[in-house]
Length: 190
Image 1 (cartoon, one colour):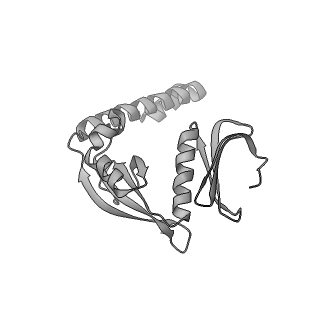
Image 2 (cartoon, rainbow, N blue to C red):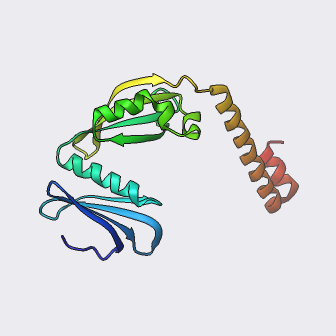
Image 3 (cartoon, rainbow, N blue to C red):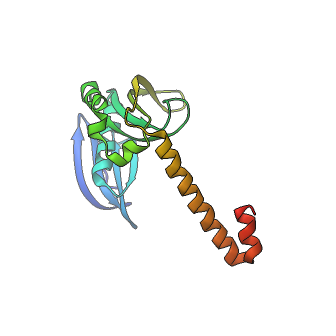
């Protein structure tokens, strides 16, 4: 395994069935970490850069190595609307086995933080296949999905409306500082 000069400090290096996973800091970028996954003949399988957490970089590197070995992984995702209708997946967890993922899916209210659950209208259990399509994108499939029984759409809409109003007021104040009363009024729509 050749050492890459872009690494500042190697934090961990492990082998998984012939694949190497190196987790390190990234030279010149404080608080950013990298998981470099290489195959048996030193070809780069994945180069994952992750802000703020070497543990997540290591975990993602492990999943990349498992995919390279032909193993599927499983996920539980939290969605703002019905999965597949748009791209509002808020957060999720990935697991090595379907049994682990299914336990998380069945107890999502206990596994995810209250702040993550606040915006989750749906829970999705799915599989991330080791196989990729012709463009190199990972193939995924939904196994099960269900509504979040504690999701309060009205509260989320109120919170979003308050945030939008705060942003509009901030833009109006900045326009007022730059262009006077007319800029403020234009931004406020008056």
